[in-house]
Image (cartoon, rainbow, N blue to C red; front, side):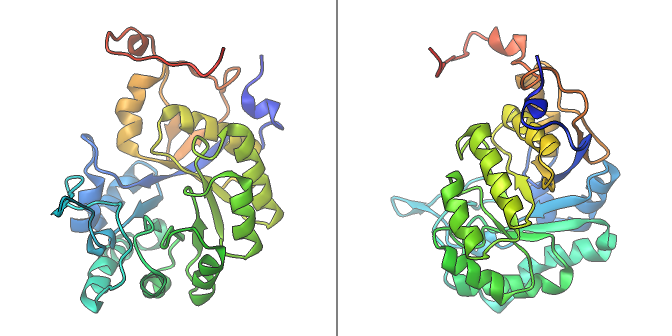
Length: 299
């Protein structure tokens, strides 16, 4: 009859800061905003108590996927966050992407922490160029600037710049993270609790990060059950740094999935009122939908 966070060691905090990944949703056009009115977006987030935002202003200059010779356009911005890595970033494009970061700093100063998402869209020289360009803006971290398939290359990126490097929701199991940490290739450890093997493996990864005196920050965009599971880890594990959210998801379709909304107030997810287990259930209205498809991995 205990919450998961109490079963895996007990709570060491009552709340955890959240950061907003700036995805477009019906409620908030945050991706469009960071390209066109980044200062306004930063002020909007601060008004909700959110003091950390993640943006990807250079993705649009990376090669786009093609299908049958036709470019695949994804999202309202007209470009995709996935595709082959770029091998050329012009000085003009480098400066254009930097404009987002500059606009945030000029409007709100250091009241807003800024993380840069790379979506693994760049080769090493381009990633180094971007990292060096943002050094003077004191970014919180740079994430997945290159494919995380070589701990040695990730370590070189970390050595070539003062900007902290975050690695990586694209890695799976503690064994992949062990290689990165042994190479001193990360300053922040990111993982997705669903993709990497569930709560047990996530705890092992977070504990491994703590062995190197590093924080962890769980990934979202995979649904509200993932967020709840990760919040239990953030409650119990001392090296939790922050939890990723998309504010439009938390105010929108996440509420349709769970029987109670996520408790996020003043830029923090509350961790002090968990019921036994995960502490949430799927919403009755969701389970009653005629188009619902239910599968179970248990027997």
